[in-house]
Length: 197
Image (cartoon, rainbow, N blue to C red):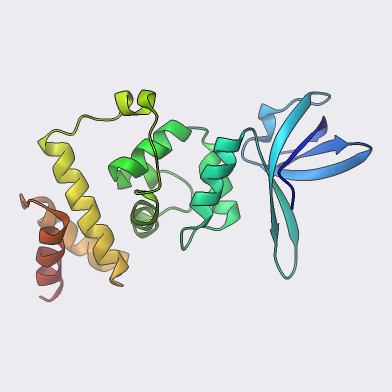
């Protein structure tokens, strides 16, 4: 319903700000409220989420941040509050690079994101993330180790998508890490073999 709002910040609280637009104060949940100052004139991009028991407005400093939020909340297991918590770290370049490179370890540092959710984020968004030239230059080089990590991560993500629990995958991960395999499918086959024992 709303795309953006331009107005004056009148209240800053730990989890939200109030933006006054033409005499109406809109409560907006934002990743880092303290990035805004009272009496500051701003334009905030908005996502409205309507549920049975509540209507919430989420605010973003630009269109790219809003688009990233929409992508994150499209992933199973990531709700609006989790998506906002991930964006609150304000490392959007790091986040998109981590998704593009299949970096599970980076993603699990965000609150509420365990290994399985991180793998699901990569699985769902990897093909949708487009890195800028600057991000590509700061992205790790695709050496043998990088390729191995990507194949390994994709293999684990595929096993998670098959319904194996984090506990089951944690049990076989050390054994899989020791293998030098050439593609995600090989890791899936090796993983299935280990899981059957």
